[in-house]
Image 1: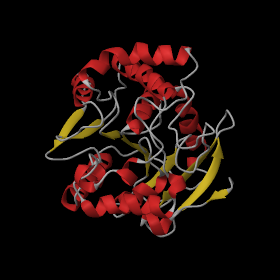
Image 2 (image 1 turned 45 degrees about the vertical axis):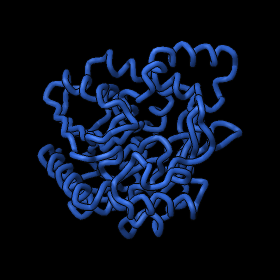
Image 3 (image 1 turned 60 degrees about the vertical axis):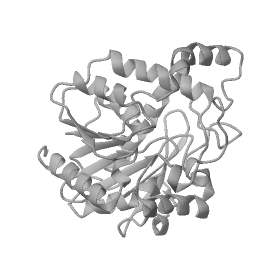
Image 4 (image 1 turned 135 degrees about the vertical axis):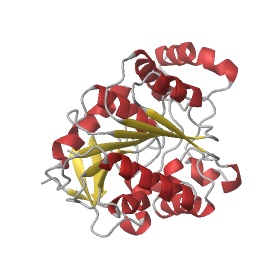
Length: 313
């Protein structure tokens, strides 16, 4: 069995009995996986978090899923959470190539059943996790159905920047400055420096305090802005998403009508040509639709579980 890692369940407020483990990807990078409800009767939801996120952020979501008979297995991607950081400045959001995240997916899959998280498997992918999850599906991720929330299939930028971002990132990379913070980025985590009234994640002040409490107690969970190289690699991955043929399986995607972090137009464009896939807009929802006000959150998690139950093994 892999070595046990710390799971901060008091902070996560997840179901009792959760656990975490250290896993080493094929290239030697150590990632952390953690979950709740191993052996649950309806199968396991593979939860792919977004950029800056970490396993504990989804403790409450895991409780919602377990209440409906699903286990949750989540991951700290390389470069964030308690996984290995990739630069001396550990606050920088960085990755070698976006496809490196597939090495993290592979080691999670290699160990899921050994850790007690049994099939059937389902994908729940948020934001950057939706970018990673798209390629994982394309490469045959063994899931029966998939749900995306606010997937990062495009990044919102000022109108002028959208046209120069790609050549600018390429030039900066060529000059050897790709590991610098992108544009006006800095080491601070978004929820540490952004008042609730100005945040673009959730309308729920209590949930926002939940995020802030995690980082106040354990600041090492957080990261700051991404690097130019991360952005360059992410844009290449998003070009792949829009130029490829999506996998034919049951898919649902949620997006808030107030989404301001990822590009809603890119999500609509991808979903429009995904045969049989369903796009659901959440009125007044912001980026974190799974972590919105309680009424919205509980309705969405119930719908997701019902959707997965329609696609058993």
